[in-house]
Length: 66
Image (cartoon, rainbow, N blue to C red; front, top):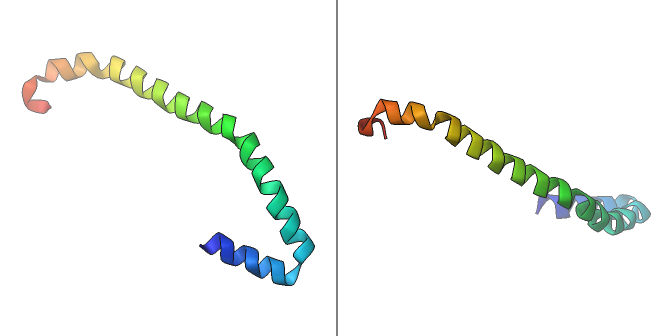
């Protein structure tokens, strides 16, 4: 909602820049989409590595620690 209000203010103050922002936003979103996918993948890989590396420690603590 805040982004829309800011865009409306920009449209009133400088409409060519607001229209340019409206046209460029989908392109920026498409370019950043693969980077988001890589980020999600890296978070998953690091979570898996952390679980694998910490498994012996969790097993040594016993069932009460879980």
